[in-house]
Structure formats: C-alpha cells, structure tokens
Image 1 (cartoon, rainbow, N blue to C red):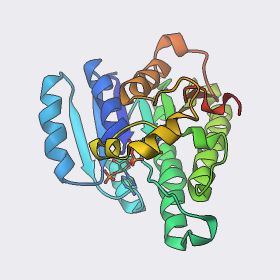
Image 2: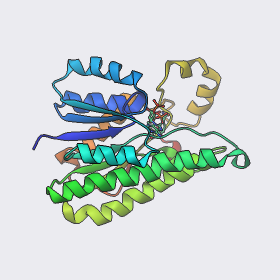
Image 3: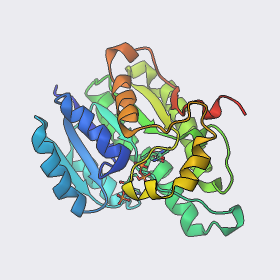
Length: 242
Ligand SMILES: NC(=O)c1ccc[n+]([C@@H]2O[C@H](COP(=O)([O-])OP(=O)(O)OC[C@H]3O[C@@H](n4cnc5c(N)ncnc54)[C@H](OP(=O)(O)O)[C@@H]3O)[C@@H](O)[C@H]2O)c1
C-alpha cells in the first residue's frame, strides 16, 4: 500500500514545508488548502518530486467540504492536522466569531477529519499516524492569547485521548509544538517584536519550518515506533522555566 499523507493548511508556511519533506520521501500527498492561488504554486513546486499530489481547495469550517474529501480519498497512512489561525486579542475583546473560527479549525475540523480517515485506517488495518500541530502555547499561557491557548491546549488533550483509543490498532497519535517560526517574509520587518520574543527563548533562536517538518516526518518512521500520546516541543527551551 503506497504511503499517503494528508496535510491540512498545506498552502504555505509550516504545512507546505511538511508537504515538501513527505514528497521528497516519495509519499503520495493529499493537500488541503484554502486559497486557490496556492494551488498553482504547489503544483509547480511538486514537479521537483516523484509524488502523486491531490489538492483540495476549501474552508475547513465547512463540514461538507471535509466530508467530500472523505468520500473522494480512499485511505491515507498519515494525517497531519496543521491548519490553524492566529488571534492576539485581550480576553474581553475576543469576539464570538474569533472564538468559533479558532475552535472550529483547530478542534472541530481536526476531530471530524481525523475520525473519517482513522475509520479507513482501522478498516484497512493500516498502522498509521496522526500528527497534530500544536504550539508552545498549548503548554503554557500567554498574554492576549486566550482563544489560541484554549485551542492548542485542546489539541494536546485530543492527542493523548486518541493515543489511548487507537493504540490497539497500532495507530500512533502525537503532536509537535513549535515556538515562534518565521513563515512570512513580512514578519522579518518587525524586528522589535521578534527580538522581544527571542529574549524569552533560552537558545536565542526561533524554530524553522525545516526543523518542524523533519520532526513531523521522524514521528512517522520506525525509529518513533514506540512514541505515542506525547508532544515534541520545539521551543528552544521557552517552556523549560522562567
Ligand atoms: N508560525 C509560528 O510561529 C507557529 C508557532 C507555533 C505553532 N504554530 C502552528 O503551526 C501550524 C502552522 O502554522 P503557520 O504559521 O505555518 O500558518 P498559520 O497562519 O497558522 O496557518 C496555517 C494554514 O492553515 C490554513 N487555514 C487556516 N484556517 C483555515 C480554514 N478554516 N480552512 C482551511 N485552511 C485554513 C491557512 O490558510 P491560508 O493560507 O488561507 O491563511 C494556512 O495555510 C499552525 O497549527 C500554527 O498554530 C505556528
């Protein structure tokens, strides 16, 4: 059975980097993106690899979109729930819309998509992997991050509970939790903010998209065969202490 990896939020940033590493390992890809203009960029990029790539464009807040993917794709061997969003607002300024969007993409869409494809894994006896992209802010709180922390802590709970349920099927479930990772060139302009963040990181550096992608891939290999229900925190020591 050809290894096939499904990645949400694969149109840019960490998700796209994860897509590249799995393509470089000749795995087939199911990529879920939100913007149709990202499709052309990915198709061009994927010409460098020997991977069969299927791209679905849509909003993960739309459950019919998720169900359609489930009806079209026969199976996957790895599910990577990477799509998220950002929210930096003081608690009382968070709107219902902010709350719903963050919870929907990180938890509801993640839960439903995973359930659809885990059922297929179980039916086909695939000893696959589920990898959720969390955050250091799924481990500790932060100012103006109530809704983001809530969603990312939720991801850790889901990871652990699924590892318990799915262990008997040989399906492993883990999370990868980055610190600040530069994903857009425009971010580099805000050096004051970046320096402030860097001061909180004992190693004095951000995560890179390449580091995160390699950790995710490692979790799918035989070397990680006993790792389940846990989180690899790639935070340069941010959460190690004060
Ligand atoms: N970058 C960091 O500093 C950092 C740090 C810690 C953790 N993380 C986590 O790492 C993961 C990747 O982060 P990132 O910085 O590369 O990008 P991001 O801004 O968190 O977005 C990830 C991707 O998710 C997609 N997405 C968001 N909502 C969606 C929806 N409703 N339907 C479909 N797609 C949706 C985005 O699509 P669009 O392209 O259309 O926006 C984007 O491609 C996330 O889970 C994030 O929380 C990132």
